[in-house]
Amino acid sequence: MKADHTVVHLGPALAVSIAVLAVIAIAVNRYNDRALAAATARAAIRAVCQLAALAAVLALVIHALWASAVFVVVMAITAAATSAGRVSAAHRASVRKTIRCLVPVAASTILIVVTLVAVGVLPATGIAIIPTAGIMFGGAMNTTSIAGKRAHDELRTRRGEVEAALSLGFSSRDARLEIIRPTAATALIPGLDQTRSVGLVTIPGAFVGMVLGGASTTAAAIMQLFVLISLLAVSAVAALVTVEMVSRDLV
Image (cartoon, rainbow, N blue to C red; front, top):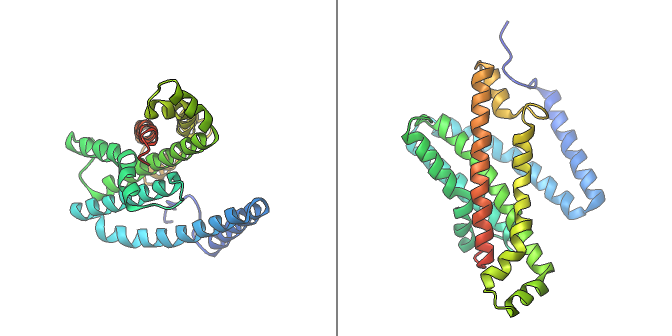
């Protein structure tokens, strides 16, 4: 009998289950906020389209290192644009803000991946580089989005405190930094909780995927540890850089 290397059984029942779960999410969110329900529907549709495209594109680029590198650049720009849209008070990503968001979202990830490839920890292959960079981009993107949005929200609601600090002789950067630094740090909480509870509350996808692919549980655990620690690193850098950029009114 052929081994089943998937967590769920593929077929019509799975497609129906996904559709029902999406409808539940949209319906519940519509009860709270119609705009949120619409955003949920768009996110679900985009996920279907983008994952279908991803499967097709990866089959073409994953075997060529140069093509994999181009794909990583596309991922970085997309992640930066997503964060720029969240951080921006106008809720849309301008080219300038997207370029600036590349610093917290992508710079640390690219540096880490290049270093790991150079020292031989990460194979110089698309199958290794693309998912590794993608995981790190995702973590840095989420941290940048949350930290930046929280920072701008605080500056709007506590404008009087910023003005008071300015009247006491603080520079604009220092006055803003006093307000936003503590709240923006909350962007790191999801990653910290995920790392602290791994194996006790959650069994992450990288671990499950490696085990299903035939790797030993020890190798899977080591790989998952690498993923979690790398996420802590890129998220810490992303939060720090985002706070600094918001304090200087760069994003």
